[in-house]
Image (cartoon, rainbow, N blue to C red; front, top):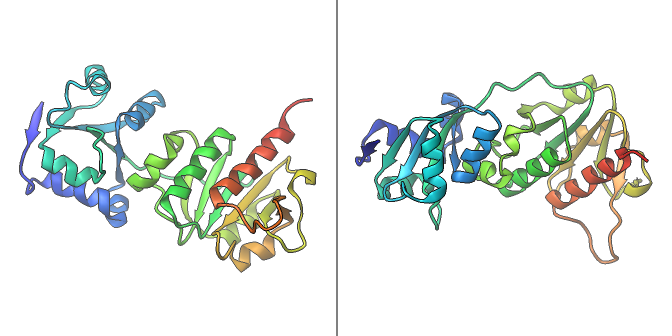
Length: 258
């Protein structure tokens, strides 16, 4: 394998920018998958990887050696200090994978869609995407102002969900919801029905907002269903990731036969 040792190498400069800058990711339509788990998940999903980058000295680690032996993408070794400058983790994974960001599909007008309206924390976005994939959501929409769905932090937290559920960024909620043929549900305390007493079957957009502000006024006004998650007295709210999981899995429960 080739070895890169210079920080002035254009490949290294590009990789550092991909790790740090949303603009670089979206201009190049590329991003980085950090670690063997994500690379293997991409391979198993048939997701094309453009190149693997291995931390010098990690080539013989069992999980990395297996990926290299499969030869599903060309590989390059990076000097330790270069790899660590790109990865930016306290404990190295030893492997990075360069992959393309796909063109998003058209917004669905039916099915089960999840709208994230103002959710900015990368960890929350990633955790929610993981839940959405597990709950068989058809599409996830990120409104303007949400965290970058294709940042390495979100990709790590999502644990391969990007390869399962379509993610569409920079969605304008008003026309998207106007075109949707089903209902729009939000979580709120105002004039809301109990989550466990509300029919969530059929075509549905579940819109979740930031923990502080909730959904935007435009989404709030469009809501057909206002949901209240029952909580112990004295507890005001749940983390947005936890609240999303509770709502999605109540729908999963309702859709189970029998």
